[in-house]
Length: 364
Image (cartoon, rainbow, N blue to C red; front, side):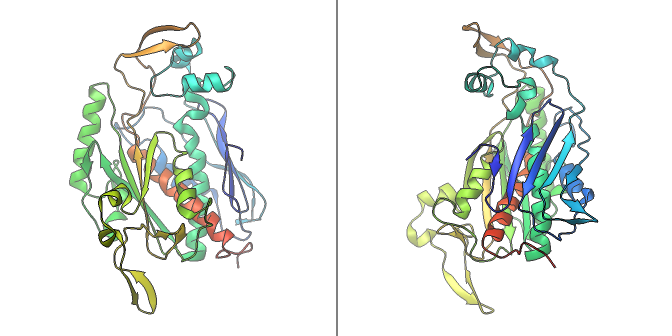
């Protein structure tokens, strides 16, 4: 499979580089008849943009342009092409990479070797988080499709930053995650997280954390075992987000410490439906959705671009040295990743819902 494609029935083709002319996405397999406007996509894309001093100072308008696939306010069934233009670009700090100096933690060296030096290094090029704008545009379409047809809701939020954890909250509380710039729905925890981010920034450093995402009202039966099970496809998509270093479902790694009697979810019948009384499986059994909320957590490393001197190498001149990474960078990406995680979870759910026949190719 080609590396820039995601999905089988609903297919996303991602394109663009950090400092190129545009970043965008083409989506094939979109059902005909879905009400859709640029405003529907824009409101989700706006959630990804930098919000305050805890984010990069790069300011892109990210104005969404739908190029094809919509006519008279509804999808046509043709490929849906969307893009945003890169405007606030300053490539001068990346002259160091052009000269062969690798930024520790980045793909400068590996990309140079894989593509023979022909890759675009400006802003990290294809390896920049900038390309996730396309993921969010595709996710906005998927969120609208899932809501319109199946009443599926996808809620992501910041669960952890710098070892500061969000307490357990109700779904109603989680829905308030966008009410502050940290995207943590617990105000006191959000305040502490923000202080940790700003402290790291002041020290020329960065911090990582965890985004948790919950999908509600997912029907039983999504997933195509074994190599396209629902959790394996979700994990593949989520690992495509730059800076992701771990993905777990339900109890995740905690399940390795439990006994079977503790980890199994007891089953029951409520209101004529089969449910589990706990959800340590995270809503997926045997790679197939079981009707319970899908729960997935995504671990993000601290951003690699920091203002501290770091030991590195020049891969063109084959010599060692030190580097202080210039440019405009995030001291933490976790809060900005919330809509990206939501978008990719929604996209995979929509793809599987189409494959399983829960969403028809033409909508009424």
